[in-house]
Image (tube, rainbow, N blue to C red):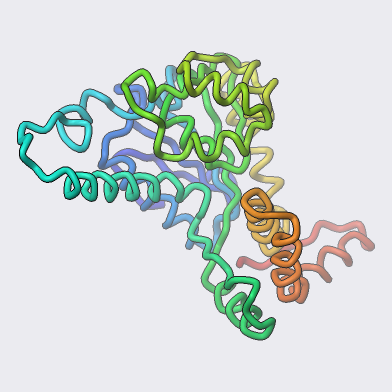
Amino acid sequence: MSTYQYFTVTTPIPCVAHVEINRPSKLNAFIEAMWLEFKIVFDALSHDPEIRAIILSGAGDRAFTTGLDVQAASQAGVLQQQADKTQDVARKAVEIKRHITEFQDCISSVEKCEKRTLPPVSRSISCRLFCWEKQLADVHVLAVICVMHGFSLGLGMDISACADIRICSSDTRFAVKEVDIGLAADIGTLTRLPKVVGNFSWVKEVSLSARIFGAEEAYRVGYVSQVLETKEKAIQAALKIAELLASKSPVAVQGTKELLNHARDHTVADSLRYTGVWNSAAIQTSDVERAMLSGLKKTKPRFEKL
């Protein structure tokens, strides 16, 4: 694996990468260089044919991440108070919007893993299949398991909301913290959290109040799927899940993630049409035959890299 300044990337078991946010002396708080490198890490893994699942966690005992390094951000960047009050407001707004969009894209790399959007369903079937087959050769969609412990605040919510699976240790403390620094969260929490958690009243409560909530509450509302006693046990649980996912057909895992994400963001009718187009090509994979034969023979199937 490549060496990064703010992240440690290892392969604890075959086909599984473990990415650690590695700034524990600052409670893994993010500065701009970190979120730019974050995208580089996930983009690199998404193109690695050897990797089928990713575990994301934070180094140290105290925090997954406390979010944005507010002190650093207040000294440089868009949070810095501008001395030049004569700067054109519209031009300043364009500059800030570009910054926010870049930041969003970096964090969204966890969810996207370089997947591309299929052509609109209004196109002809032959055109859609051609484009799908061309994209399938270029796309490697990975399952991402986020393991949280200690503090998971602000940007920690943005990042974890992008993940496919979230688990945490019992000491985890969460918060949508942005209102406490005078902002509405703009990197993804307010967009994704209402779709991850079915209780919109609860989402508004924690987002408007910035109150801290614990692991058991996160589990009760469905934000995490498991709560483990310690960080170490949570990592081990994530490894077991990742190993299981990595043993599945990568074509099937890719398709399932893609179709679930599409269903989340579209109507039932649109998603059914999209699924039909997707599987009209994907069902032709040799993985289907391998999986069915292994079931009949009671053997473990082996699948080629994507």
